[in-house]
Amino acid sequence: MPSNDLLPSEQPVQLLDQTGSRVVGAAGDFPSDDAMLRAHEALVVGRRINEQAYALVRQGRLAVYPSSYGQEACEVAAALVMGDRDWLFPTYRDVVSIIGRGVDPVETLTLLKGDWHCGYDPVEHRVAPQTTPLATQLIHAVGVAHAATLRGEDTVVMAMCGDGATSEGDFHEALNFAAVFKAPVVFFVQNNEYAISVPLARQSVAPSLAHKGIGYGMPGERVDGNDIAALLSVLGAAVDSARSGGGPQLVEAHTYRMQAHTNADDATRYRQDDEVEKWQDRDPLLRSEAYLRSRDLLTDERTSEIAAAAEAVATAMRDGLMVDVEPDHADLFTHVYAAPTPQLREQQAFLADELSREEAR
Ligand SMILES: Cc1ncc(C[n+]2csc(CCOP(=O)(O)OP(=O)(O)O)c2C)c(N)n1
Ligand SMILES: [Mg+2]
Image (cartoon, rainbow, N blue to C red; front, side, top):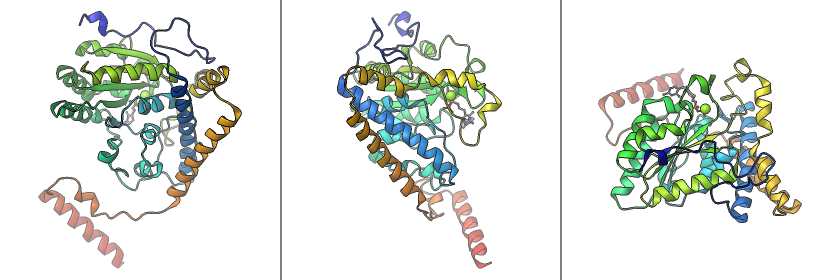
């Protein structure tokens, strides 16, 4: 492949402008009316999930929540372009994508509630546990994709990470291995401009993060991360290409983290309000709603139905997270290795002894 074919577009692909109008002459297939409506519904649900999670943190029912408020178009599109047999490898910020894949919201939030490492069955849902150590999931994602190829399956893996994670050694190793072995992976980078307090300019001086693909011989593409139509088009094409033997692709979505890194962070210490306000006008929900209304695809009645569906998800989250569970601490050790090591057995005995003495007091 000539190296020019590996380079991303000069500007991020955009199909809908900020006002929700179609961009004239834009490259890429525009999603069908049905796909746009389905995506808008998922966006509204995703926004409601972010709002509800924020409230649950304040009520002490979630230990921590890395919000994807403002990034919902990326979250929703990643889930929608995947087939049933595909695998998702999410980060801590990708709760909305996981729920978009059909995982129960309460099971999804088990990790962030602090009850357990992962509350759902990854194999059943084909969704890996959310990872906090940056970029480590990318290597596992490539392993699953390569295994699928060896088995003759047409599985595609969606491997998610943030802008900051592209500086990790694991990012390099995952992309290089995937390219050499033509693994069917879409590396999906949500560039939200920050890695906690570190702005993009202090993270990388590459022309774009998508340009990083060329170093591995992998095509890269950039897309407006607040434009659901462009995301469905670009990610959909990347998944199709990976499925049909085209090897891995790197997609960078330009978006913005509207809220603090997590509830434990104070973003006002390192960025100005006017920067955040600028991005409010680029809200992905405003854009999809304006487009659908301009084409009479979204009626008031449908809007109410969508709001009711979102409310039902929020209620289920609230009710489910109000329930206290008593995790069995022995489980901490059970699933680490098929056969526990002597050190693990020793630690387990130590913990059991400490807890029994605590109870006796
Ligand atoms: C290997 C590793 N180093 C450092 C951290 C601490 N850490 C947690 S989140 C984060 C920022 C990541 O930023 P980015 O990849 O842009 O993702 P975002 O949080 O913006 O979605 C850092 C440095 C970590 N979790 N793992
Ligand atoms: Mg980031």
